[in-house]
Image (tube, rainbow, N blue to C red; front, side):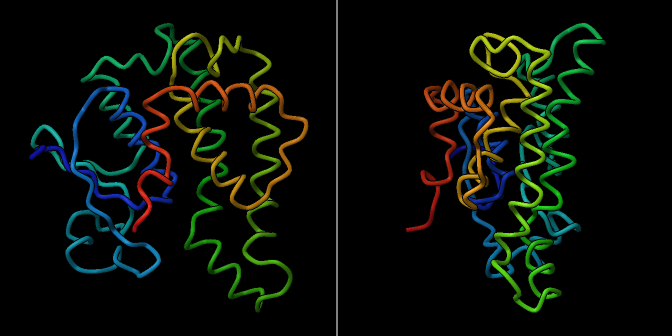
Length: 212
């Protein structure tokens, strides 16, 4: 049995990122589901792992790590994934691209945030769908514009998958789930197609980890 354990939820964007990275690194891991819909993230055993009550949590190398971007950085440094360019200027540009989704779009489209917005709206309109589309489409349009600074050959910033792709693809899953209009995004759709053909991304897809 693998001594690497990933506490995740199949539809969690942050967990999806780590599944991709672990696959890219060729790391065998044991997945333990924390059912966010049933509130398992608030149970004492999970709060002991992560006081924030969030997923993912990764146990690896004798460590217990939280926060997907921090864990990706750890894997990048310890498994030589080359998720970011080497020069400081290029590295900052690619981090900004990835963070435009992971830091700006993902948090407001978190399940708990969307649920709270639905409660506050008293169920008006198509909630939480209206909420999701309101934030996801502008965020992806901005990502599309930022991609214009890079060469998609065929991934976001070159010939191999990197941090930007790892952050983009889970958000594309959410976009399709919530029927976001993806017109005017040819660069993103091209990157999505390239990632869909990569075994590490295909194996990490939520449908491969859905219960039942």
